[in-house]
Image (cartoon, rainbow, N blue to C red; front, side, top):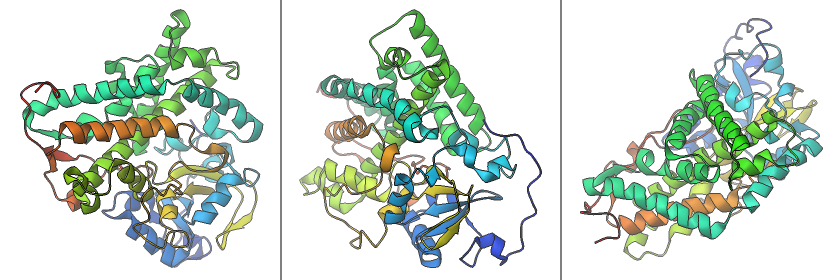
Amino acid sequence: MGSPDASPPAPAPPPGCPAHTGNGGGTEPLPLTTATGAAEPREVYRGLREEWGTVARVELEPGVPAWLVMGYRELLAVTRQEQVFSRDARNWRDLNEGVVSARSGLLPMMAWRANVIGADGPEHRRLRQPLDDGVARIDQRKARRQVEKVCTELIAEFSPHGRADLVSEYAAIVPLLSIASLFGLDRTEGQELRRALVALFGSADDSQDGNRHFQEILVDTLCERQVNPADDLTTAIIHHPNLRTDAERLQSMVVMISSGTEGVNAWISHALRLMLTDPRFAARLHGGRLGVDDALDEALWRDPPMNNMPARYALRDTELGGRRIKRGDVLILGIAAANDDPAIRPDEAGEPGNRAHLAFSAGPHVCPAQVPARLITRTAVNTALHLLPDMRLTIRAEEVSWQPSPWTRVPVSLPVEFSAARGRPGQG
């Protein structure tokens, strides 16, 4: 998962020392989880922008610094210049020099893997093609029907109780079951994947255990499909000519499932939260002017599935946003902060239908699954609003708390109440 420790971390410099700030700013680096766990992360990012400008020094875990790219134009520059900012974590100086422990919870999300995420140039294009082909072979109509079925069945399970948690009982499960079914995994395997992914994205002490279990499930699925092929994405990956080894096949599944499930969970959760708490969207339940698609787009602007996306590694000394970036420095794509950059979005509310956000990143590594992600999210939100038209959040909007992670911003829960159904939804 990463290089073993070469030497113990150097002692921390005293407060106020220039080594704390890199080359600007007057305070110690802000832990990145402070922003993602805040009630209003945009206020945290705005504070960083006021102090640092468009590129800020932050801390990924104690003693592990990074640059957070918060400028919209700067983020585009980083994602489009592979010759300067690489995706290959083997260029990460602090990892190579032992500043980052081999046991760090950051590594499942940041260490190099033999997959599309860790590659640049021709190698990236070779490994990207199986993902693009896999998305292209999805039957959109069939997928929509399958997602509707999943949503309806989940709501049928909790609707008789008159209350539910829209995260743990709905938003977290819909993408898992929907995406897992595309790979030929059953519901039990999907639930196991979910538990493993929560640990992986948390980047805490159990992150590496979660990563191992996640991969074990996928290895078992690959072995099964090699013996018993089926009409699913796992079989398509096994036989794709661009994938040369079992490791590459496994890592292709890792990328597609992990990014799809946790990202869509966040998107569904935030869209439902907006529909239930924001007057502009809540009014839709009573004939208001802003509907589901508007809520989906606003969620991508304000709380993108990956608030902060790891990572790029500087291949040479350079300058970005007025900061001196040294070879081997790690840069985090501050997607939520860049979406809020006043240079491109002076009107905080934005315009309905505006999709110029960076929620899916940009450049060669832009998300290949935007269409199926929107299909799953839109279907899940629409189905919940249709079958539970009088649901209401039972806590105040400001009381929503967030799962710990430096990367994602997913509500711990969205408890709601509604009129209890006597039978399955739609049966009267």
